Image (cartoon, rainbow, N blue to C red):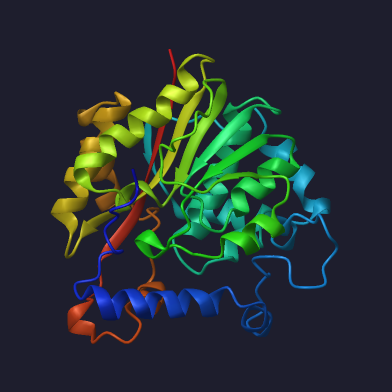
Length: 307
């Protein structure tokens, strides 16, 4: 279902996609991250076998206080948006995870952790669609969730390809290396299905089906769908992003009027978290600026409980 993902918004796909992959590979390098004062994104060679690499962003000593802080106490409206206040809270309590990617995922990954801790019973089966570097899946598995990741790891949407490395670095996460929904049956007893910066890359004609397939996994058990979606409010691609977001919201059975209200609020709220100029410039890579001009990008956060 994610096989024909748009190439991350680049106007010249070949040059832009290659540049972003090189930049992303550099950002994941343990040496470069160490020099930049950032946590490693996976366990380097020689690390203790069986270690879950998410411990490099939030160690065991900080993990359980996070669980205690947000467990059953992070109520979610059906539609909301990422805020600077939420990011600041994450930076205080999940410092490594909130500084792992230098972009929107620093906000969204932490929000997803809070959303699941606050609304999904510990020990539940949960599924992440298109995880890429499965930092959130890894953290949640350490907290006692039974976590499955479905991702083909073919680099779609400028995602990573390091499947074997991730599989070794996250031994307690179950990986299904396919597009979503996969060919193998997953069961219908999940407590949650979630995605982080993924649905905006699914082709318009497929995204509704993907969202519905995800929600079907939680319907029997009364679970929930939780999605953080990159949304372009202004700049090139804004109309296409809005159309796709409306399709996602409709597939979840959420209110189009509520979506319009939240987007209007994003546009005027000084608390709205936007992708920084620095992050956007890193995404631009070697492209001339006039081929990849600045956009105003925020996170629209979606929640639907089954039943």
